[in-house]
Amino acid sequence: MRRMRYARTRLGLAAIVPALLATLAGPAQAERERGRWRGPEVHTEDRSSLAAPSSTTRDSQVSMEQAIDTVQRKTGGKVLDARRRDDAYRIKILTRRGEVRVVYVDARTGQLR
Image 1 (cartoon, one colour):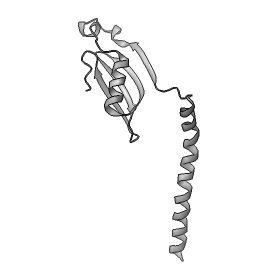
Image 2: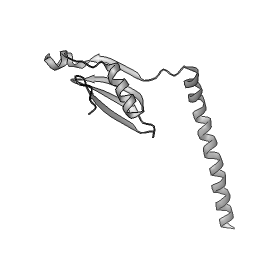
Image 3: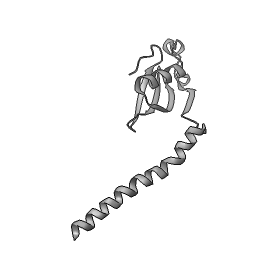
Image 4: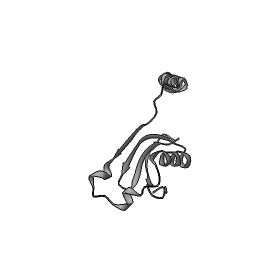
């Protein structure tokens, strides 16, 4: 008797959980498809101006947009946030597996750290 009750409960949960997830994800997916999703917020403020000027700060050869493109190509993730930190860009991404990662890109060479 207990086994049947347990089996019915598991079967009920197995049907309810996917339906609930689909209900919650539907509006967000619809907004993305309609083009209403704004995407990541990109901060272009340069905090290096607070420090003493150095040749590495002034000789930056990689723009933030190039750094973001590089990270998206190499990781396949979505950019959540991007900021300039001294001689590197700090880019926060959401991976395909749903993990949040932080990637640093050298502002002079464009290499990922």
